[in-house]
Length: 266
Image 1 (cartoon, helix red, strand yellow):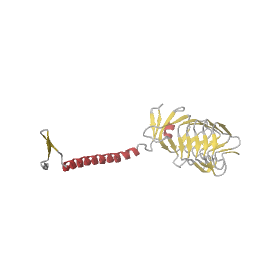
Image 2 (image 1 turned 90 degrees about the vertical axis):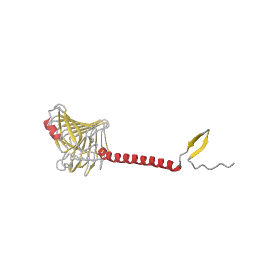
Image 3 (image 1 turned 45 degrees about the vertical axis):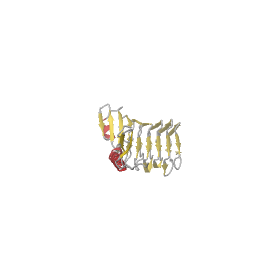
Image 4 (image 1 turned 120 degrees about the vertical axis):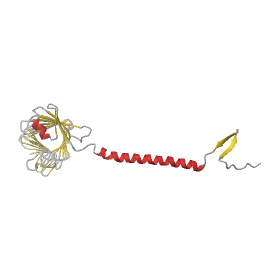
């Protein structure tokens, strides 16, 4: 016998129990609701990501903070911190600090890379020498970058050492300029300059001594894996220009890849 079509919305009875079957319109409505909920959630996630992005981009602002633990004090410029310090103090440098600083007393400058700060850098802002070291002063520079100094009249774009003692530990002198004078990175005028660890003098520019100008009986020493490389001079001494009476010691350090030459002994 042919089975009659069932138009009641119930499946044929099995074991005496009527079984309700879901209609296709009901299933479609449920799936559409789920898709709408999923789309809304995805939209919220996108909006949240967009709202968070500016905060992430601003996580490392260009700010400067100098800490002197001996005085329990902080400063927004290195010159102010230097002026307030006592001989032998350590100044902790956080962030990018702009300007030129004259060091008149024995100090240690140590860069600190902390969350919320850019890489510790002393930046001359293309206005003048970054650090000027007075005669007889001993300065130790740890884990710092010195850049964008510009001292065309007197020499020494990054550091102008006027008879002091400068020790660089794992620090970088880069991007400094003395277009019409000597010592794009460092001008060592009768003082002592020592590079230790991975310290480097690179990508600096000067008339003579693109990386380092060593004059008036000064001494430059490169220890460990320190290097002078990628510097340029208009005339001679792309890496180091050494005047008569000066001394250059290479104790593991290297002077390579400078233009037009690496070391010139005048």
